[in-house]
Length: 179
Length: 325
Image (cartoon, rainbow over all chains, first blue to last red; front, side):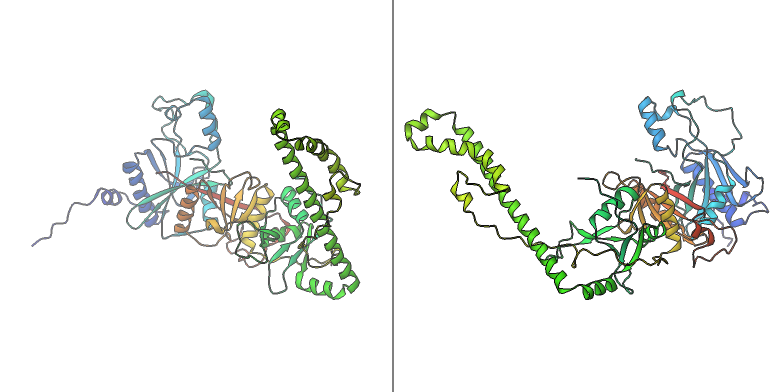
C-alpha cells in the first residue's frame, strides 16, 4: 500500500537541486530557474547564467537576471538591418549578441520605477565568462559596430500554464523593427 | 497649396463652455500653421450641417487634445477663450448695421463665386467646341460640298475663345455672340461662412492664463515626445493614449503606441504583453513613459511636481516589442 510517487519532472529536479541565495526571495529565484530551463531546452540558448548581483556595482539585485547566448539574433536594430541588406550580409554571418533576460510572472504588477531600477543595474552587454572561445564566427567588417538601440532586456513572462512569452524592452525611444 | 501665414500671437483657443471642456480652433490658417510649424495635429470634427452622418471627410472646426491645448497655452502661443461667453458677448454687442453689412458681404461673395463659376463654365464649353472643331476641320471638302452654312460659322467660333475670355470678366463690351451680352446676372450662391458673426476682433486677452487641465502623467509624456519632434495623434484606435508619428502623419506611419503612467503606478504585466503584441502586430512599438521621481512616495501623482511645471523633470520611456520567440 505504499504510494509510489512518479519521478520528478526535469524542471522540478532542476529547481529542487538549487537552493536560492540568501539575498533573493525563493520565489524569484525559482522563477529564474524555470525561465532558464525554458530558454535552454525550448529555445536552445547557451552559456546561461543567473545573476544575483548587479555586474556594475556588485550590489545585490532586487530580483535575479539571466544572461545568455541565443541561437540566432533576438534583436536587429532597423538601421543595422538596412546596412546589412545593403552590404549583402547574411544573418548567419553576424555574431549573436548576449542578451539580458528578466524573469517575471504574468500576475505581477510592474511600474516604471521597477523597470528603471532594472536598467540602471545593467550595462548594455552582459558580461561574458567565456569570451575568446567563440565558435569561429566573425562579424564582417561592414557591419561591425557597437550594439545599437541602447540598453535592452528581454522580458520573459511566465504564465500559469508554464507558457513563457518574450518581449524586448528598450530603455528610451527606439524605433520599431519593420519585420 | 500656399504656405500658411503666421497668425497674430497669441491666438484664441476656444473652450466650448465652462462645463464642456473641449478645445476648438476655427481658423484654417491657424490650423495649418500649427501643423506645419508646431507639430500640432488635433482632429477635424466639422461635418455638413444637413448631413451629419457624413463623417469620412471632416472639416473645421479642429478639436485639440487637452495636452495640445495645454502645450500651446504654456508656450504662450495661445490663450483660452470661453466660446459660449464670447459668442453671447459678440452677438449682443454687434449692431444691426454690422449684421446687415456682414450679410451684404456674404451676398456679394456669393455673387462673385457664381460669376466665376459661370465664366469658367463658358470657357470650358468653348474649349470643348474648339476641340470638336479641330477634329472636324481636316475634312473641309466634305463639309463645303454638303452645304455652305458651316463655312460661315467657322470664323466666329475660331475667334470667340480668345476675345470673349478677356472681355467677359471685365466690362461687357459688344461681343460677337449676342447671347453673352444679354446673359442675365447669375443667381448668387449661398455660402456658409465658417464663423457665425462678423470676423471678430481678437477677444480680450487676460494676462493670467487659464491652463487646460490635463492628466499629469500623460501630459509629461506628450511634452517629452513632442519636444523631440514627434507628432502625437489620439491613440484610441490602437488602444493607447497617443499614436506617435516621426513626421507628419500624411507622410509617415506611426512608430509608437504611447501610454503615460505615474512613476509608481502599478502596471499589469498582462497589459504590457498585450500592448507589446498589439504594437508589433501593426509594426509599432508599445511605449510607456512617465516622470522620474526620486523618493519612494514622491508626489503621489495628483498635481504636477516642481520639475514638471518648470519643464526640467526627467521623463523615462521604455519601448516594448515582441521578442519573436
